[in-house]
Amino acid sequence: MEGIRKWVQALFVLVSNGYWNFPVTRGIYQGPLKVVCSPGLNCYSCPASTTYCPLGSLQQLLAGVRMALANGQFFVGFFVVGAMGAIGSFVGRMACGWACPFGLIQELLHKIPSPKFGIWPHLRYLKYAFLAFMVVLLPLFAVDEWGLGVTWFCKYVCPAGTLEAGVPMLILQPGLRANLGLLFVNKLIILVLFTGWAVVASRPFCRTACPLGAFYALFSSIKLVKLRLDPQKCVHCAACHAVCPMGVRFDESPDDMECISCLACSRVCKFKAINLEIAGVSLTRTQNPIPSRLEKISP
Image 1 (cartoon, rainbow, N blue to C red):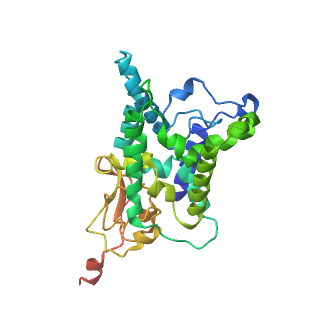
Image 2: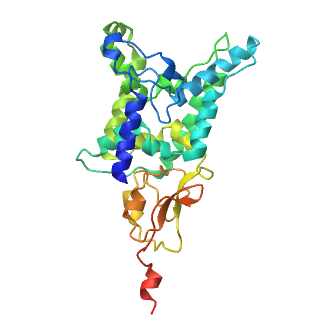
Image 3: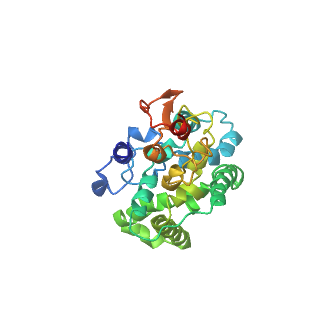
């Protein structure tokens, strides 16, 4: 199943970034596919991107709401919110583990040989603060004299945007380098910190700072596709603890909001106690499971 996941991740990278004419045009794709919502964090301004980033689009929406209402434009498009809600209610953070290009980049970086370290669990709450303040509240309320806000997270933080759009566009359009300032230097430092951190720790951006992951996590209890723990088969051997890239202890917290349904825990579970389900229907074969500890010792 891990091999299948890697192929799916690669497929989403190619589909979300399928405009390979950018070395010729030296610009951003503006074709009809740009109305498609990418399930993962994939910058709109990436020259290869054929989709829009849900996080950036949500900020754009909120940043323009007040100006639109002030001008009597009461029709506000919430297509992006609906698309994000549909993805969240169907797969939740599974999108992070299967469809996010920046998540795949972090996984590949973590394969570089080096000492490996954990991440302090309480840092997980930072991404909810980023979601609340930099994605929702500041774009909505910190507006200029015309009532127009700013995409705060994209502008000041997002390392995926720096990697996928900022650096490539500077290469494609050297004239942009004259406008570089402290803002870009700050974002470049953030990118270097997270990419370096990803070498020694598993998915640090996903676990501590990604507002999109925080949004999808809100659907963890109602999503249709999820991992299910069978308490009758689980012997709490803790094998799932060591392999989870998100630091989830699945046998202790099967509905953990950090779970990205990467199936690493299911793969190492000798007792077949963890199954992938869609609307309650198991997709994992559980025939002839290894007997549980109680069954082993019973006469």
